[in-house]
Image 1 (cartoon, rainbow, N blue to C red):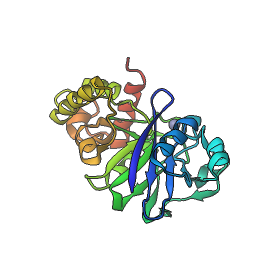
Image 2 (cartoon, protein in one colour):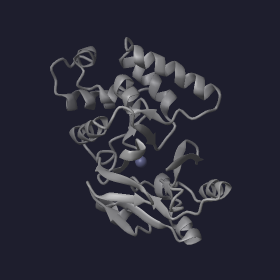
Image 3 (cartoon, protein in one colour):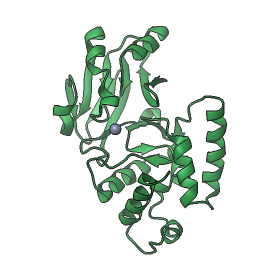
Length: 254
Ligand SMILES: [Zn+2]
């Protein structure tokens, strides 16, 4: 399966997925239609599927126009079926979505929204996780609690270390600034911060990173690290509480 990143709106990313055997082509989280059609057209790919990780408009705004233009089928989270425009196929945890020869396991990862899912293409070593896990960060908890979001991140961090993480936004540089502020002694984080600055300096995306890199550097995946818990004044607290405190600090970080 070929994967092509498509910049959308100001800082969203959609991802074109193409299975060359069947010719099937998906777009993950199309904020808008025109750039997606252009990116697919440049490659000679014809859109057959629209994949939504969650209902937010900046992930589904292109659904109906793309469906009208191409006849593509819209695939999204079953718990959010009433909030996904034009949904044709609603998927639950542990179901499998197939794009030609490529198969994605559906992971239910609520917290940012209550119906959020990820598409994990195990054979392709790739996960599309929307606004739950970002590079060096995580999404805001609009519809969930800290224990819920922590459980979702914990589910994601158990994926193989080489898994490439395709998230919904280019937030990595701002996330790095916050991460360093609460975990300044983390060498892996410092190295990633430098790499991110270099990429952004050249105007390049920081996506994808890998799960191994995120587990080492992303403070939201390290809430059960005793050193980090102690550093934020919560030694011996449950990981979900440490996670909640880190998320609260990020919400207030300028
Ligand atoms: Zn969102």
